Length: 386
Image 1 (tube, rainbow, N blue to C red):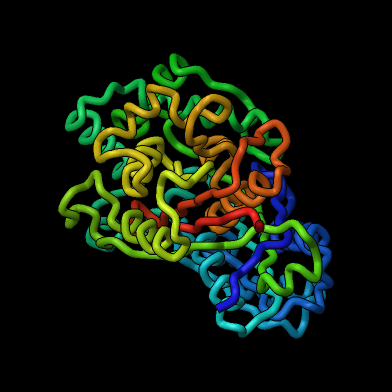
Image 2 (cartoon, rainbow, N blue to C red):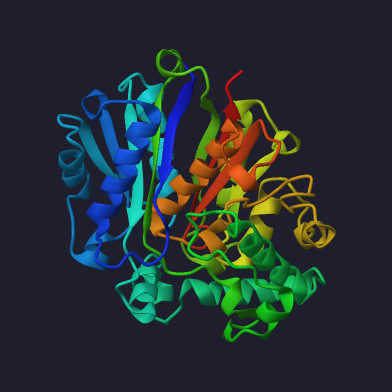
């Protein structure tokens, strides 16, 4: 099986995009990605769109077909990829499979979501619909799961509340240097700890925002990549996994089985381990998730991720493993279908040396995209071509 390369990437401005709809956002990212890769639209064999809920948010379906028309990419095969908030990562896996299988020599993946025209309550209800019906009918939402898990984690592992605030503060600081981020403003730990309670003990700044945006990647076999450029990135490992749909059925609520299993598969495929990763993008929809993913992926022992954060291990400029150099979902924003794709865009730019003031020294990167509260997960490992 030939290695799969990424030869182009793009990301729109994330935030509140008034007067624009999902098809506008997808086309913007798609056009920019085609230009970045130097690929003509009619050379695209497969066109995938990662999107969770265009029907629920906008009453708009058939978005892959509309995008093929807008890009003039006919007669490319099109498909929508929905795996809730991990739709972007699932799109990467599907695009990788299309190239790795030999079915496509050029696959364009575009992820996007348009959300901000809905009220917070309406958007939260759309997202909460991914929970199991036994939980949904009781009014359970993902923020409530996050609050319950955070309280259990802090008490069980004797972790200070400030450690979660430091995750948010770090990611906001990183977002200052990301011109595409929704929030480009530092927030100190004291402000985070004094912000309104959302799901005790988590407060406003422990949660990511509701966001509009799109991101895209161009994938092809490595042999084809060399026809376009001498500098590219390869996907050396990728895997996906699921955990129980009913969260309270998990043996340990502080362990996300989907993270553990998808990470294990990605490491095995790449021949790498946690110590080989130079930079990572984790799904910090809530600050507690950064701890759980660090531990599930082997970057920290169980119950000890908070200690590494306290020590500055994950800081961009001084830490041994910079995490969420993009600003993460926390600062960059979380347009559901785009988030996993945008994670990979950040790792691509880091490995290509194109991250500007966010740049770290990296040859290997990892991104982990989580659906729901760990219900489904995709982990992707990327390496700069040698």
